[in-house]
Length: 126
Image 1 (tube, helix red, strand yellow):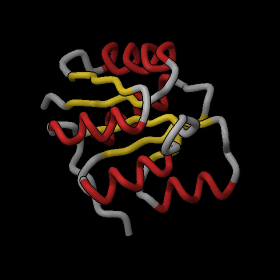
Image 2 (tube, rainbow, N blue to C red):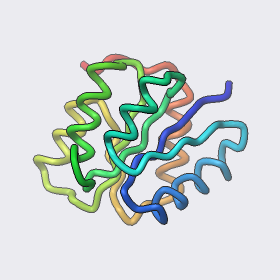
Image 3 (tube, rainbow, N blue to C red):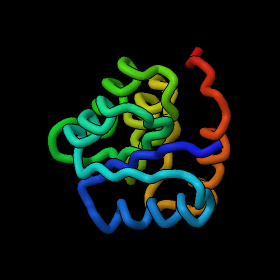
Image 4 (cartoon, rainbow, N blue to C red):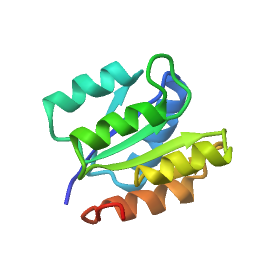
């Protein structure tokens, strides 16, 4: 089944990198891009997004704040947060939201595993 993924990162190069990984592994999926959380929320209001891959460090709402708002509005969406910040508080905050933690530098195999899990219906965080 085809899915729509949004990649949220203030770095155009990073968005292009993640887009490439997704389309190499899921060529039938649609990939949208957002440079910040405001663009994410605008795209979300337009509907049809199944998966969000969000960078942690962004101007405005950081990835954790954006993911929390996204989870509140769309509890069914699959979320991964990408960050080089592996501090316990950050990682536990990501996991508390029921999101996947993907450390930088991004490993393609890790993204592929996340996409495979995101192709399944989301279980509520427990």
